[in-house]
Image: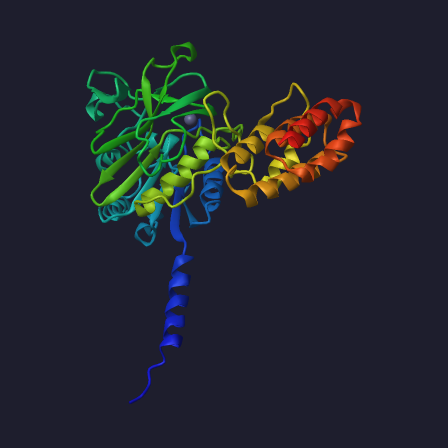
Length: 403
Ligand code: ZN
C-alpha cells in the first residue's frame, strides 16, 4: 500500500489558510460631486486614508462625471466589493445604476454613508430607506418623521416641517447609546468630537434603524435643543448600512473634523462592520474623553515613538496631550512587565535627552517615581543636580528607593 505523505499536505493547507488570513476586503468610495458647501475632493481622499490605515481594506474610488455631465456613463461595479462608501451628493444616477446598487445591498452588500451624502437623492425611495434619515433638498413630513433621542429611546416625530439643519460649527460631546454594538464596544460612553457641523432635524423613513450614538444640539450655538442621532445602522434586505452624520469639510480644506479620533475610529469600525458584520479591530489606546477632543494628525493612533517625540517639547501652560497619552498607555499596561520595561527605557532616554524641556522631564519624573525601577536612578541623580529638575528628581529618587 502506498504511504500517504500527510505533512506536505498539511503544509500546503496551512499556507492556503495563512494567505486567506491576510486577504484584504474590497472597499469602493463613490464620489465626484458634492453640494457647494462641501468638498468631495478633500473628503474622499481623507476617508480613503482613514480606511486604509486599518490595513484591512483595499480601497478603490469611482468618480462620477461632473455636475451636468452624462450620468449614463457612470456605472460602478458595486457587486465586486464588500463595502461601498457613499461620499456623493449631486446629479441622479441612471435607473440602471440605481437598480444595481439596490440589488447589491439587498443581496448583502455593505454601505457606509457619511455627512453630506445623506442630503443626496431625495427622490430615490430605496436610497432613503437605506440611509434612514436625510436632510435638505425639499425634504418634509412627506419623507418621514424627525428622529431624536429622549428618555433612553428613539422618538419619531411626524409634525410638519423642513428636514435638515445645523447650528454653528463647534466641538460637542457624543453619547454612546448602544455600548454593546460591535462598532461601539470599548469606546468611551461620552466623547468630545472636534469642531464640526452637528446635523439636526433630519427626516426619512427611519425603518430598521438602530441608533448607536447621539449628541445634544445646543440652542446656544443655534442647535435644535434635542439629542440628535449621530451614528446609526440600518438593515436593508441582507445588507448592512452604517450611517455617520459627522465629517464636514468645505473649500477651506480644514480637515479638523476628520482628524478627530472619534470620527476616525467610528469610520474604521463602522466600515468593517458594514463589510462583514463584525469588528476585529482592537480598541485603540488613545481615546477621546469628555472634555478635550483628541486630534490625530496622521488619521491614526500615535506610535509610542511618536508620543515621546512630541512630548519632549512640552512647556508649562501648553497642552499636556502627549504626556497624558503616555500616562494612559502606562495605566493600560501596568500589569505587563515587558511593556513597562520598554516604556521605562523610553522614559530614561527622554530624561537624558538634551532637546527635552525641563517641564517634560519633571512630568516624566513624577510618572517614573511610581512605575520605574533602579534603572532610572542614574539619570534621576544627574537631574537632581540641575536646578530646574532637582525637586522632582529628588522626589522620584525618594519614592523609588523607599520601595
Ligand atoms: Zn457640512
